[in-house]
Image 1 (cartoon, rainbow, N blue to C red):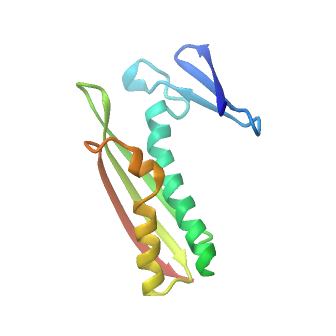
Image 2 (tube, rainbow, N blue to C red):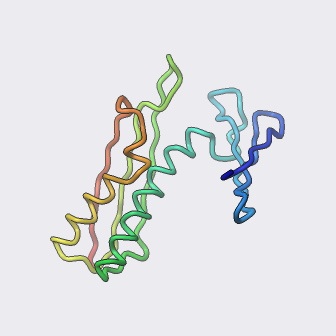
Image 3 (tube, rainbow, N blue to C red):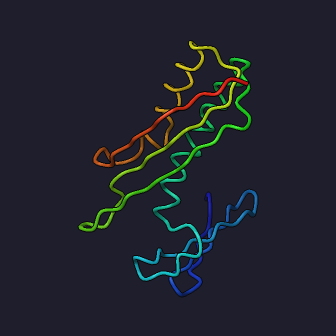
Length: 135
């Protein structure tokens, strides 16, 4: 078992990662009867796409001896109404790196093949941009 989720009431849950004990609180968004005081479940999906892309790039960067510490991703989500689901995920990736042009191409390709992005429904539009700054 990976985690245990408890409903706390008022459209809020707590997820407990069983191996580490770390906790994540989710709250329904304001536009769906919630308070919007924490990540919503769909925020978590969208955020997971960005986190996965950065993690996969970090693995490949380590293999290539490239430093990407300090790189960031701005995560954006658009919802649709009927059925209510994620319509679009946008990731603006700001890479601060020692990578040369060939290594940048490799890292961009790796990011686009992260397991979360590949697991998302094909109807979800995925927009990923990269902005590179040399260390």
